[in-house]
Image (tube, rainbow, N blue to C red):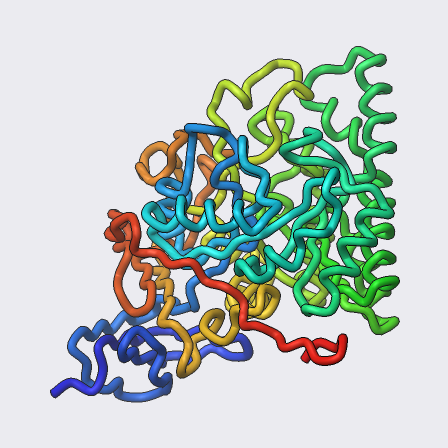
Length: 460
């Protein structure tokens, strides 16, 4: 009788070290053990040589429903499975359904559950007209964090949360220990610079960066972290394109506050002078893609340990919403779920950054961030056997050729990747084999944070 259901042998990547010729063993959907040497017997056993074996990634920032009747969970989770992402955390700004109440959370769980091929957690937010009164009921419904914005894209679907209301929301969240994540662009500053760009007549690829210069991000980051300091709420910037922003967060942490920053894979990959110039609207993202000097500055922040986690901010806009010659008229955001893991490994290996950071920044830290680390985030005994295997085989990425994306375009098309995702496992079951996504809709489950008891006003 086999000892385990599944054993994989290869280069096992843990948060602190790599087990060369190591193995990981799975029983009943959980990691049972890892080790070195001769792997134990199992019903299914794969000796993978030089392949990397990492914990399945947790993508902290996904927009599955930003465009009605476009992507949905049926496609976002398919892309995730193909790319070694085993849990997505979906944003609350859904076209036609702002997730700002317990009813909206439950509605989204019921909608996503039958479609999801990987596990999913949810963000909640607030309707500015209601204030923070629904924060407790959304926590009870199982949201893993809250998302706000200092910039308003749309008054109903993506509203600006003004400073006094942001403070009220942070204060309501603080006793629970959940994190308040915020989109970091100062509304007044952005609108002023946008008007200047429009008045100048610049409409090409340069317009977006000019309309959102670095100061628009940095002003917002001070607002966010100072609100966290004032309320005692863990404060998190959900994307930062500037090295200076990570220094600001570090200063708040030095002073004893919980202040973290997320780096999206596009800020570590694309640059303004080459990629935005070449791609136009297909590289329009808020905050903007910055010059190559900032890309390298962000990799230095990764190496220094000042990046808390890496995500995609994935959204699959239809092509007609990304190809307007007027740069500012395009929708903001790009798809990335299928390629985040190999892109990060490529960038890290080129700069001599240990591959253990992949396990930490794309699995362990996101699990801690959303309080899912009781079941997710590492190849350690007792946690879900969520695993991604990458072979040392070069491939040129082509979103259309893979068939795992609702759109056939990607700003990453044509990039040579040294590592190819060859298998993804969710709770010990293979859900993708490097060519085909095997998971049926409904395979994924809703995951919620481990509750924190609140006694006499103090969270424990």
